[in-house]
Length: 501
Ligand code: B12
Ligand code: SF4
Image (cartoon, rainbow, N blue to C red; front, side, top):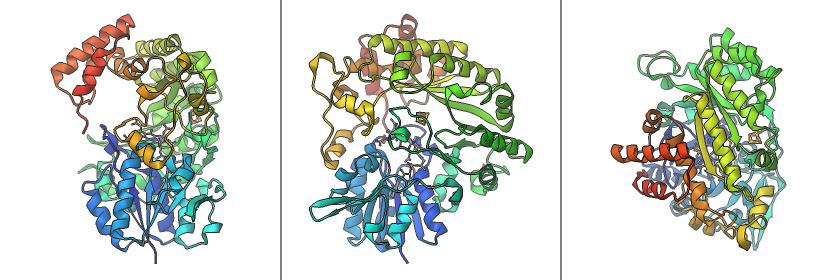
């Protein structure tokens, strides 16, 4: 019988809190293979110590190694592929995940990779492991002679037909450290935001049934390893864990969402939970006052919104289909019912002017003035993904001072070189469409340490000397008050003192 090893490569640079999450994609594939009695194991380089030793040991009697790859993971994934081949030359190396799905041909033509699986991996991996003829497997690409063969894409699967996560397949040391337990109740999203992986890969929205979701929570609640010592449930006591509906967009079908939330309340499944939602869903007929009260009652403590920009022109350009007023309204609703609203922003799109970025900062200012408990993520520098309208624009149009377009790396090895020291996918200073990359890059820090109260800024988990931190926080507070973000020398200096572990 075939044996499969699924690996999440270590990140190039680790950041705080990564160990509170998990590779849900690999868990989903492992669950599916296990359901069909395939022998499968997961190794996670982000969260397991000595993972390379584990790989060396386990790969010896393994037939297939599946590696999940975000662009930032390429250097490590290449090293891993080499290690696999050195320890078992017969083992087939299969790459899947966001980077191979965006760059199918480049990835499949690399000599260390036997096959690329693009798009969702569950059904495709099963076909591969079952030894189906390569011509007949949808969603794969591979080198054949001088040619790269890219088979037809696979249709998206129906989550209601998929088994619930089998937690026994996750290494115990990961489960015990997992603070945010994922439940995946739907896949994809019906919206059209031009920067988003879901819109680019055309991942339309599909669901599990409400009953399956409730069963999933029941299973999680009864797992001993999720509970702190002396507690009977992971969701009670001093070290209570939290549940995240890992969906891209949990609330699309409001009737289903109501069945889940009412079920949690009626069936004693009340749990601290969070999820992602769109700002314009907080309205009559969707998440209205009556329903938001129920969300709170069922344990919802945080809702995460993609606010993206405070500028109506930019919101239109990226087809976000929300307006800044929706964001303010959603914050007021959440605060009224004791739910923390969390907003992520981005800046530095091709053609975005400095005053348009300032509109984003003004919206952030308006938000934090509503309540210090509001959480702001970013603004992160916009980074383009191929296949999107914005990507084409970055390669060609909208560039200041007649500069040439961005040169995308021409091979997988070049991608590896490009991202090897990058925490955030790509180096902003090399984006030719940006007039002032230093300004864009510094904003996240100025918001994080300047927009909120000094107390909450000092409470951030960034590892740095306390006095230096206080000095930087005070400077950021002053900058934020004056809305003065030129000459970011303090940001550049502070960046050098932050420990990257
Ligand atoms: C959860 C998440 C994380 C988690 C955990 C990720 C992990 N692997 O451990 C955390 C928070 C740690 C994280 C970190 C980062 N992330 Co992230 N993350 C996500 C997120 C929101 C959801 C992923 C998920 O769980 N989806 C649900 C599962 C079921 O789907 P999936 O992962 O896509 O897996 C399916 C397929 O891709 C495929 N598949 C995946 N792997 C494999 C492997 C094999 C062998 C096969 C056959 C198939 C296969 O099959 C799976 C099942 O259907 C995505 C956004 C998104 N919507 O995808 C971004 C995303 C993947 N992240 C992204 C980025 C950029 C990052 C960061 C660089 C951001 C940052 N600045 O910190 C860091 C990376 C850290 C580093 N320095 O290297 C980008 C990746 C873009 C790219 N070109 O690679 C995405 C797409 C978000 C975006 N901006 O659009 N991330
Ligand atoms: S609503 Fe969110 S998940 Fe859906 S396409 Fe837009 S950014 Fe992506």
